[in-house]
Length: 290
Ligand code: HXC
Image 1 (cartoon, helix red, strand yellow):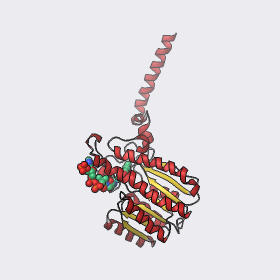
Image 2: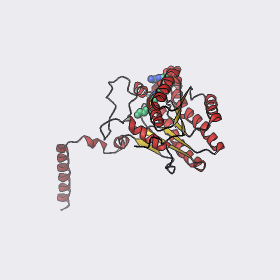
Image 3: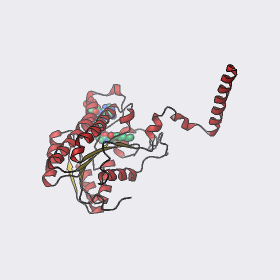
Image 4: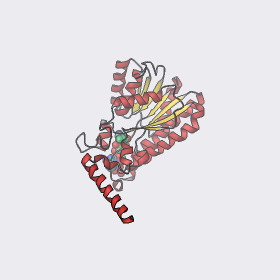
């Protein structure tokens, strides 16, 4: 889909880059020539991913253990990167989430999610953005969100609240930082099953149960679809695209949210009956009027 050197010369930081969606995006950026920085809480997975990507694509992959909830650690880490060379891209991918009835959440449970998603994403964005502004260096930020920023969602309320806040940040900073050549966009993936997410969002059921629910395309997302969109947003030459969160969900959230979505389940025979019932109602009205 893209030229192999599309991202050559760029340095891109991916939070939570050792596993899941972060790792997939990292692979694709590296395949297209970018050097990577990946951070996360588990050194072993970071190291493994860094070695794997370097071996495959020959690009540099630096890794660092970091909990993005610790604001000072975040700023020190970004300082150490910029001391050497400014980043060109940031992917705010690290997140925390689990399903729970909201009434059963403890305040610490709420904070565990909000501190990662809402606070941590801001710390990271602020640390990178202020250095881009200071150095007059162009940059691209991608925030990994979820379609519940538009719809809300039961049972994942701390995530829905926090990710909605980051969507607001996406729009706000696109406007505030556009003059510094910093673009800020979001991707809201639908079902792209990964171990980290599915262990917490679909823990008890067999693998397929919630995967493609209400997806008109009838399937889950393919990693290459996410990789292609992220690479496009990281590349130059479409800088006018900023402040947007793009749903990548096979129209799942539009289907679930539509008033008549459930009609999707009707057979041709059901529709024939519906038409007959509607015709009967119309004819009755006409008879009443005459
Ligand atoms: C109720 C829970 C709970 C659960 C944790 N808690 N799990 N409460 N139900 N299933 C509560 C704990 O009881 C505790 O509160 C508080 O949360 C903190 O728990 P810790 O385990 O000490 O927190 P911590 O080690 O900081 O772990 C953070 C975490 C964990 C978010 C809870 O799940 C994590 O590290 N996740 C990272 C990876 C992740 O979540 N990936 C999925 C992202 S999916 P008390 O009061 O008891 O002390 C995503 C969107 C996907 O973001 C979209 C798909 C469509």
